[in-house]
Length: 432
Ligand code: NAD
Image (cartoon, rainbow, N blue to C red; front, top):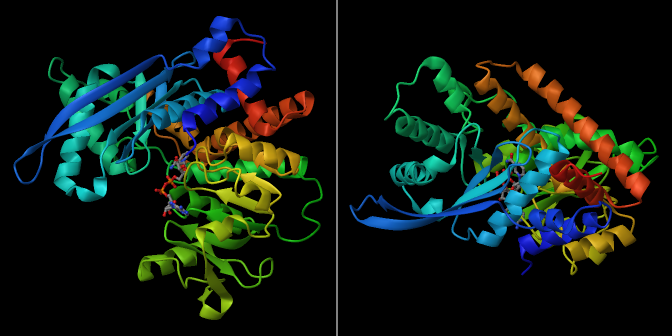
């Protein structure tokens, strides 16, 4: 199994060949500034107390407060936390937003908890790290298995703790709201946040497509396969479909579906979503236009979807999905990394040699943290922006970041990931 932190450091090492740093500066980038571990009890529904183990990795505050999600997962692992926190620092620098990198998590399978237990756990975790977070210190957000509802409980608990020693007026309340992003719209959240990661990925692809693969289109619709049909997978599928791309295949943790006529028929993500909701699984949801018909497609495995003959492959699920084993069999021309860390360094080398362009996660999925930054800013300034304004600012940020990175890759003759890391290293160290 690939250690994600080793992968992240490997990506960094490649970029360090192009940036002049002192040994201390290089070393600094390889370690988080602070790792917080907390162990806290929660009373379960049966009246017994259970001890939980949680973390918060604060990787870099060089450019602003630590920023990054909180993950609830039974396999929360320190190496994964460190990697995700480091990638957050890189991502914020690439998107050029004034925030650093962080990540947190609790070792728990939330599916085994009642709603009441989940709320108690969320509040207890916040109480345990309350002294280490705040709008100018560290700003958590949702991640795997944490939702806007959980952010609601967390921000409420944080306010409760802060108001013990001081009276909190309305403007102070709005400021403290900025401690968490990804909140519900009704409680300090930002318009456009739910779709932001998918939308941002679409803007990145739009900015780069003609540059990385000129004339690829040749008057036809480009075909796409998307692994993962959760928040990110659904929205990227929807934006690509609306823009005229042909969605050949989709998958979730239980399996994948593909149209029989790749390039001719496209899955309609909204209809597939409705069908999946009704049936409880993607299997059989071959929805083309407004018709879902068993004759239009077939079920395939999660391995097969990655190896389909499509123009663009979009991993939007998990880490380490594209590795030295399957990389030689990948047929797509472009890989748009919407998940964090889906490609191992060994697979990266193979793709580079095969002239497959990888649009890296630290650029492709940075739309989410960018709109989280907008949410933080709106809370701090006690403002509420329209969705139009959020989307337009997001587009500006994503387009600029994409073109900057393309230019560095062109000048330095590197892949886009190395170019993104070069940009981030320069911004994180103020080096040339
Ligand atoms: P999610 O939980 O909403 O969706 C994950 C999807 O992946 C689900 O459909 C799940 O069934 C599917 N999946 C799991 N294992 C799979 C497998 N083996 N094969 C195919 N599908 C599988 O999560 P999300 O928020 O959409 O996040 C997806 C990825 O994007 C993660 O890597 C996450 O870290 C990253 N990401 C998310 C955001 C965000 O704003 N949500 C921002 C940046 C990066």
